[in-house]
Length: 80
Image (cartoon, rainbow, N blue to C red):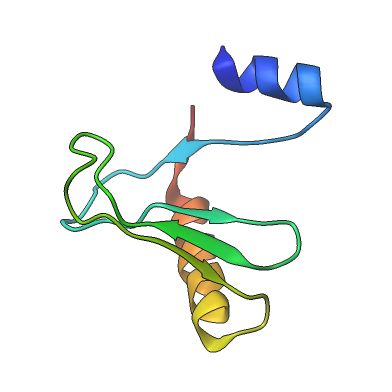
């Protein structure tokens, strides 16, 4: 419901998916419209664990790697 509300109120088209098997540690990242990537290293269950927030600029080697990884996982993930 939250995602539907955000999309409705902001006239956005956010999507969320889960993939079948999560590895430890697993990645949490946002793919931004400008091609840059924000990675969130902290655990969402334990926010005091592995705290890091990083921004990779569009076109950087790391951003390109993350886009490729994201695309692979997105294809096998299930919409929620």
